[in-house]
Length: 188
Image 1: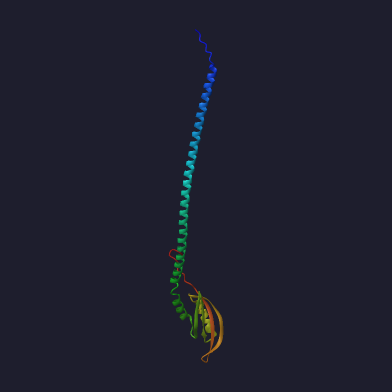
Image 2 (image 1 turned 135 degrees about the horizontal axis):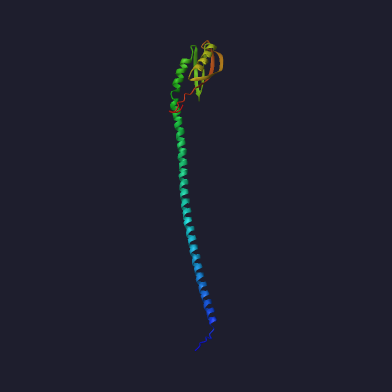
């Protein structure tokens, strides 16, 4: 016997394929949602990690900025101490200067010259006194210029005065001290 299927088998196949399509469409949608969620989670995690790195770097930069400011303060203190040291070294190098100056003046002042005042401003020495003649003043200036400690003697004023019934020439001279700077070892 021959069997004839009168049922609409094509309709059932279409219905089955349609149902299969909807199931596959649902699975693909779920799979796409899962992939999107995983991508979103991974990206958010990377953003959080990067934000943590940025925060760490900001903290480190702030601590380094603080250390830099401390270094600048220490550098300023070091510069101030070095300036003080240079002043002390200059004073130490020139502390015997007055002794040498008085010794040199005692050697260079000729007979017939009487010193009245001696003043120092920086490297400039102002000398006032009395002389028996203008020639002795000239000799004093020449002696001061030939001295290794003094240089550039300049006559400011000379005038005749009477001191204790003696006629003397009052004078005023300026001269400069030649500073003897000590050179550091290894420097020329």
